[in-house]
Length: 118
Image (cartoon, rainbow, N blue to C red; front, side):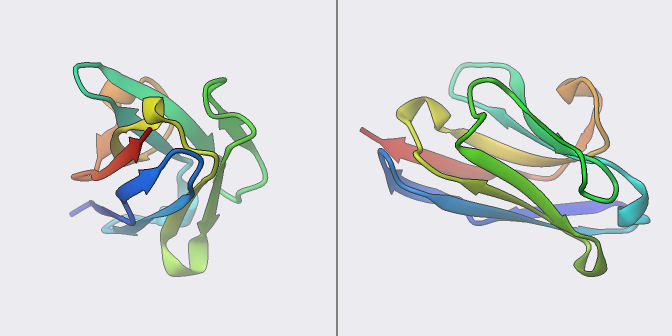
């Protein structure tokens, strides 16, 4: 059974930083690209970033490019998202997702709330 468990969210001030983690189990983690997606209050799911199986290729939404860094540790079945220079518009529930593609089609965890105060 595939499980994705996110952690690391919280309340942070404008300009602050957070590190999100995702613990994956139930599948061959290193064989799949992985993604982070988010859903802000009253908004739809938004793709944030994705990473290749080995971690050598990453992609970012324009809204987070230069501020967020995605990484993975295949030996630990773990996915990370380092977030810096956070803005109120980054406030959302952040989900770890298996694979790449349209956010609504990806298997996601339960999410972790990130709230950025102005």
